[in-house]
Length: 214
Image 1 (cartoon, helix red, strand yellow):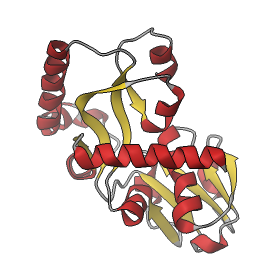
Image 2 (cartoon, helix red, strand yellow; image 1 turned 30 degrees about the vertical axis):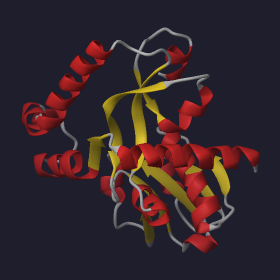
Image 3 (tube, rainbow, N blue to C red; image 1 turned 180 degrees about the horizontal axis):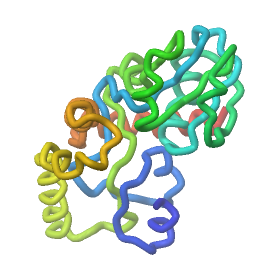
Image 4 (cartoon, helix red, strand yellow; image 1 turned 45 degrees about the horizontal axis):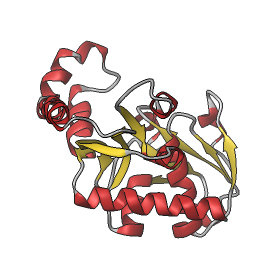
């Protein structure tokens, strides 16, 4: 979605925070985001050995912010220097010996408890910074009319306030139980873009700059 926003093919997009540095200028337009306070449960590093013994990490191809967060944590918090490997479908089976893997999404719920070590990346970020983490935010490259944003915020708020209804209506298509889906979408994903999350976004982007300078 970021290229479409960058080249003005769309006016507003939900953009991974790690990609914001690629935009020449941007506005954080809404009061909502995809974030987490401490645990998120769906962005994990799995390993058979402790962090300091990891030699390589296979990076899930599904989330730019999670890939970049892994690199930030490795360099600035865990103080390790693994080799990074781009994932291909089925890469989870390569989590063995001293190769760890970052896995994102529903697949984590099937993998939890299968490896000697697992690290929730949002929780590790909180240990590092004492701040929540923002994976994606609603962004524009030109300021959008305040009335339109107010209406869009109302739509987003309605969706967040009615997650349970959406789960009930979609129960036949869920890969999780209704109870697990409700827990994940209401207790793990944190949608409100408050001041702490804005601070976290700024800090994360600053660490990305330091990564690029290394």
